Image (cartoon, rainbow, N blue to C red; front, side, top):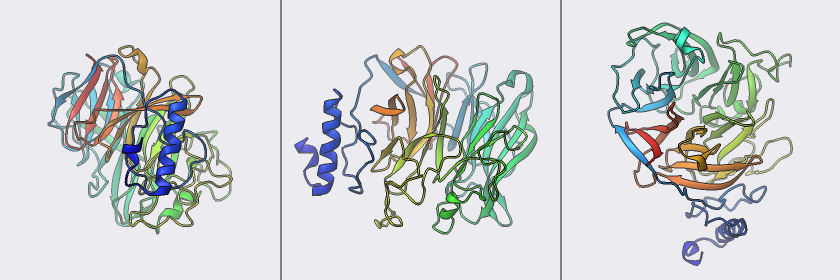
Length: 403
């Protein structure tokens, strides 16, 4: 412990020491994060950040299947075991579990791929074998700026194009910026779509994360036709959009349903520090930009620098400094029994796969995988074979499985 805290500020030393003590008391290893935090903010409860570490006991490997993808962003499994992957510039590819890539799939609406935009998250219809329908999120250009949009279309029989692409939802208002689109998509257990949006980053748009009459900084729940789902929490409320499911989000980059409880979990970027993992409940306010454990990139405090406030949800877990959490999935396979129901998150600036053990809606242990590869892990999914598959900004597709 002494070697790890040399050179830190006194306040940061106390923060690190308290979290290491918590880990030791729980019988875990030292926290995986050893860098100085950006702030000395006090967490709301023990184990909200820097929990103790674990190490996978069984042998596993992360095998690079291909490096020929072009800025892949989203990945999902097809019923036959292959993988459907989006590429940022506006095309899709299909990959076999061995890494063989198809030709590019075209026919999608134009995207604005500048900055953090482009072709983003993707899912296939639960009845894909019959419908061949694909659903995706993208940064859509317009005369008024760019926005997060959701579309659907049919994958042609020859798998070369998307037929009859149709935009079913737009998270308005549009904004002339190229950051924080959110962009993840998920089917819930009733066959509806759950979509994440960002608040578009700039200070002028941040307050819209708190507005119920804006599509920015939200988790959205819609039907496959783009309509609000009956039972959404804000239906019938004056001044509120009926498609909203939760609000007060910054830039949600990961969505996943817990395989046992069915609860919706999400992760989102903080600014400089304060990346969050949240368990999403309908109608709840997750605080941005009113509360945060991060600071501005300039080093200044965010607003009044509040971390806890009544009526605003606390993150289940947060990271400081940032790891930039992106796509995530719960593991349900049989290849690695000790990973059962653990959450796996690709990280961008962190350049690793985070494995989180969750018990009673709390993170109790953390592990970092593939730390030596120096890749920006953009998305991760479980394949039909029980392995994990992940893509990186640098164009790699990995298979993570038992040796």
